[in-house]
Length: 178
Image (cartoon, rainbow, N blue to C red; front, side):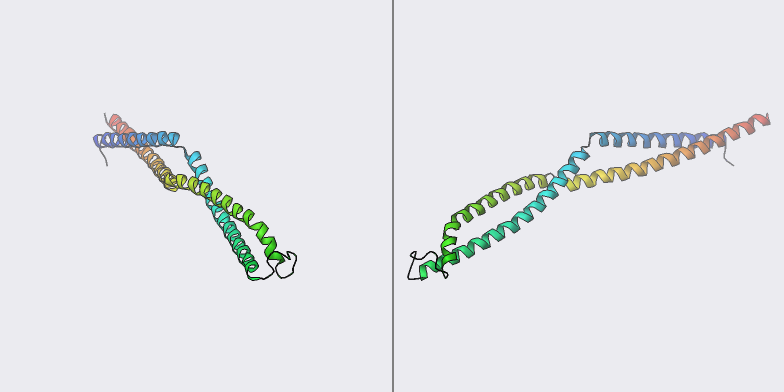
């Protein structure tokens, strides 16, 4: 059986442990209050959206470049025919004449897509520099640590309560012995 002195030492030890854990939990609460998790999560969603848009626009750019190549190849036909521009409605070179009219517009379209892509990639780079996924991961680690400390805090309170009960029991035994 434990002595009254040992019970008091245990109570003191548990009380110190509880105080230490409470201070750590307080620090975590402060960190959580100051950590802009909603902003970071929102920015990460924006980053993921941008990545999707870039992939989509890259596909669109590839299609437009392919169309431009076809138009350029079609226009080359006009250099090979002896009649030149004399018969724009000739069924063999009709498309080539139409493509000749469309090619400048196609080049402008590609330039606009490239410009849009450049802006999106620049925005994406600046978001990626902020290392959002790492920050969210660190925040989640803090939440896990908080959960563990809360459990420990509860366990220590139970141990303290048991030690206090044991102390009271010993004091009662001592008082009845007198």
